[in-house]
Image 1 (tube, rainbow, N blue to C red):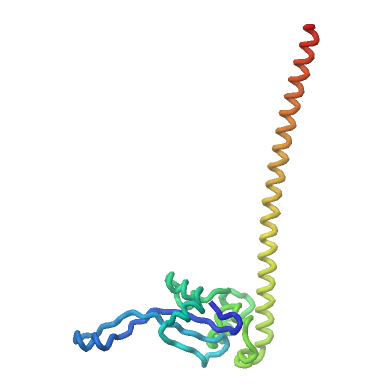
Image 2 (image 1 turned 90 degrees about the vertical axis):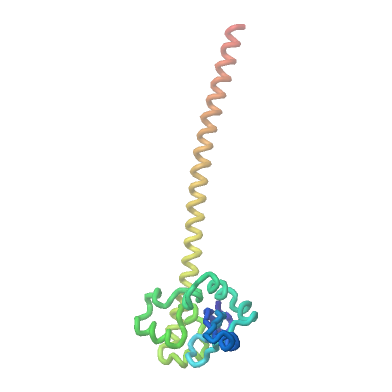
Length: 189
């Protein structure tokens, strides 16, 4: 999960680390699996931290760590729309962005000015298009939710109308039975 204010992202992995003391003691290579984190900044291919995971990393990037523990691959630990799923970009643009650690539309929309400079010409337009795409998707999501709620309410209204018709028929039947009963009692008297 990103550190949303700074565009910093992380992916976790499990790596074998040689246990030197045990290797010397046993006379054969002994390895232990250790969790590592790769922290990178979108738009900056030169700044990357790769180290053993700390408790702070687990808290700071808790969503990515959770997905890692559930078995997700590096790229699957990132949340958002993959660049390949965004029809706005050409395949060559996708490769160029991935070369500078940008893998999702959300990462692209959150680029800093410094990162935009590293991308070069057209970066501002790409970022603006990414922001517009995300805004449209958010509005579309709200519209879909409203449409679903509207359908649910229409179904509820239809159900209630049918219930009202049924109650009216029952009321008429009761009223008719009541009139027939009054009419007979008058004739008998």
